[in-house]
Image 1 (cartoon, rainbow, N blue to C red):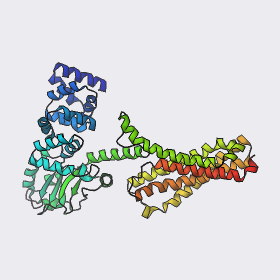
Image 2 (tube, rainbow, N blue to C red; image 1 turned 180 degrees about the vertical axis):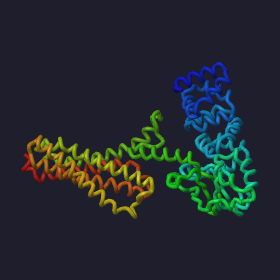
Image 3 (tube, one colour; image 1 turned 135 degrees about the horizontal axis):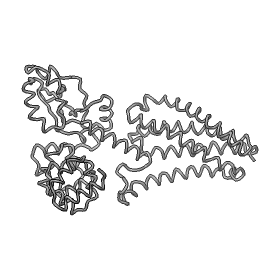
Image 4 (cartoon, rainbow, N blue to C red; image 1 turned 30 degrees about the horizontal axis):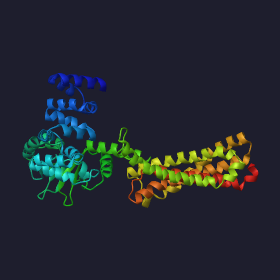
Length: 448
């Protein structure tokens, strides 16, 4: 169903108070589509809608809604009813919502929640949002290792409806330490007298709560995991990270790298407040302005040469453009490799030799074509040779810095995607112009 049609139907059912048709419409569509449709609704319509819906129906919408819309929902709904809504949501989703609403609202909601649930949420709120602790949920099944299958099944039936993951049973020891994991299928096919410790897998992958979410996503992706436990230093299980949360992390990290590569904040989007956009973008534009002046200063050193050989001005953008494109190719591969944990500066610096040779070959191949065309156009062999050498030199520079810049940023514990392209463009522009114009100055008598 189209978004506009969905919005019109919902508004019609809300205005007429047709609860039955409204709920049937909600059941017939995905929660994410409903949430997107509601973002454009006026406050009055939203208030009427949430009065007509049950707590579990509101929970489905809130889980899929964007942060701004979640804040709006909390504003409209009575806090006691919001606590009821939370009973239908996982602890990690609740934590995310509590982390973005007003402090006084958060405190009131935590007071109204059951003591056990409140403690879990308070624990999750203590972790950074971009860590394993920040994305984990406390809704899982953990059973003692000496429990027989018959008793284990009874507990699974009782606990299962309240958990996010039921197919993975975490096995704990006497001191609540994580000792293994059992698959529900193995539990179901085992004899009643068999113990959990007899069918569990002791080779467990786990992370600590302060592990970065990007590292979590790499582990889950590498080992094709559906769930990953989070443990403390005593190896006691604190929570689990599910594959759907990891998918969100992968999308978030990819978006962040894509935006920050161009000097744009991950928090910004189309429709952001003007003041926010200015605050996020302007500092990087100032940095870019400084680097642009460096390139301009380099060109200014050879003004007398350019005045005498106007053809140089027409050829300069070719050298700079090819260097930038080649550098971006290397940069993109490097950022991806670093994100996947495939490369680091200590062990893989030797690959820079490969990139240098690649720059030589690509520079020669593109330089030959460029030099030949320039020769035909201006009937000057020396100009063609100069641009050939400049192309080779600039593509070597591009490959070198495209490889080195993200590694250096990573070495200093900075995000490799943070405006690497700005620094790379400076290196290729300054280097390319200096080589091209420097050689032109050396062979000026043959160009005039």
